[in-house]
Image (cartoon, rainbow, N blue to C red; front, side, top):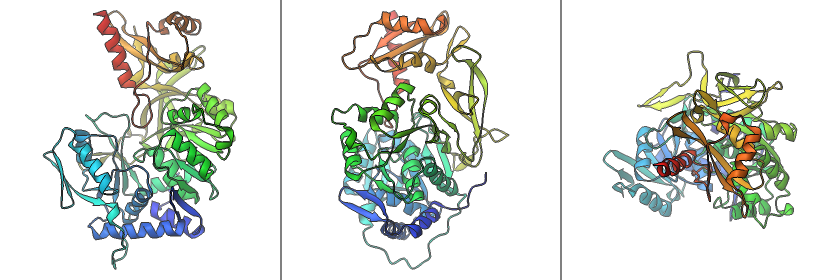
Length: 524
């Protein structure tokens, strides 16, 4: 279970040596072969060094996936800097908090236009300015700024490249589940990142012949592992569309004959809902991973059927670098659509405590816990990396699930989302599963509503399908037939649409807040 002691840059160098003339990165009006990509990375690395960045420098990258941004990620890895991936959807105070809690020394931006966009985002509720390559934000943040567009000429850097420690912190990510009030900064090593790339490439059976369509934001671990690192590990070609609109994604899949598409469920669902989706436009697709949010068995089968690809389910979180679970492409559709697959290689897993009855029989859901070399180094707090595992090395994921006889994991939800009605534990996912196969329902979320008698009662929030006629009585009847009486939601609310996070997940906190305000407000 030991990691190969290799940095991301060393992993890429091996790929460059194997496939120097294979296409590495392709975009609308250009392409780098692997040897050209490596040359661009080296030039950019020398540019960073000449500006004062070096081993251990904390460099925040605020960008969407683009050729220069991808090269910058690998260049920072080459010099041993710590890459901090900023959420490009954040504003003023949120950006300030992320820069502060990660001890960022530099902010790296693509060019003048992106720099102005970043400055405007910073100014939302804060005083912000650029002055001589420095960003001044609020009362406390002073960081140097680097524009990638100005690193056009290779500097005369005569000194040797640094030799980063593969076990040192190489990347910082902010957990997608945290609010701006309490960020958690996940630290990963170069060896973990390199191993993750090789593992995700192997999971998808990726080779140098594959063409990977990037349809994820760069600040998400899903993008880094399954797009950037996996492509580099396998020698595949990474395709970079200019945006993540479904029309653009579909066009790039068709134009560049993409073979792999990895995305959150909402991206897939938006893609297959397009009226201009035809089988011949996606005929090149063969494999991809769906993750980042819940995907019902019915949605899974519909996505796979309409796109004609082998879809792999997985459970992931930023704290576990290569993900928690994954299914194999060789598994049956029944297994892939109904489970999250098995625990990933180099990871020991178990399910303990928090026993929650799931449906009929004796099936019990408990917390998914993991340990092994692919678990993060720890959280970055007050200038130090603080371990987040227990005394026996187990990371408590906060996810609930159960394991079947074949070793496959079935997802049951988050511990914090459990609805406790009069002492009875209810999993929202079990309520949602009753309705997920109904063609009249686009999506649904179960949330807890405070109750004077029971403490909390379930409420089901529903977005009907386009043109669908659906009544509260019909919904209640369907649930009464399949759920124990105490699990049947007391309240049923219909939404025109759900709020989403910037990573494509349903914003459950906002859905719950709207539901509680609607119900408790009307009750008062």
